[in-house]
Length: 255
Image 1 (cartoon, rainbow, N blue to C red):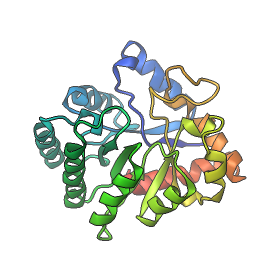
Image 2 (cartoon, one colour):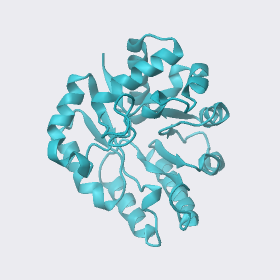
Image 3 (cartoon, helix red, strand yellow):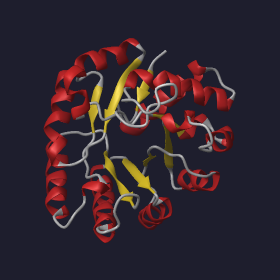
Image 4 (tube, rainbow, N blue to C red):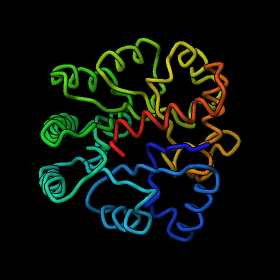
């Protein structure tokens, strides 16, 4: 059984003491492909170094995370644009909107997302969207820009059935992570109505570890726990979930 972790910050400082061991645990658990979202210039070196050390398993994106957007966001976007012109990346991201922590730079977040939407179109790359307390606003921007060429994933999706339907109608997949294993978070009401063709699996490590590791550092070796939960909710065999979501990731990210 081969699994793809479609969203994992394995270059994070939290993994510095044991990064190689953590990744080998993932490979032994059947997680053979890991897609790494960018944050901003401060994490770029670590991300690209991790990719260089594990070029057959780890694939980098390029983008600007909405919580890194401030009054100097244009500088970050210049760097994103420059890097996208230098070499291949799996996607533009993670980008999007976040109204959970701070609304100070929301206008700048919106502009940064518009720029990255344009970059995705220019480079024919998928978008990896972060939408925290801002699904409607993010979906509105995607809908306004959708010309039939935009594709991507709403990562860490834990929204309603109506939001899932809207994301899918926009041509995007849904990234399902550890939140699906949490009680009373709605996955049991939303996932059973969805087709496997619309789903990716992700850990978003080191965050949002699935049960029974909730509250601890997350890592890709826990992805099988999420796959089993999705299989349970869909009434599918876990091997079928693994195969379908891996194929979805390979197609989306051109792996």
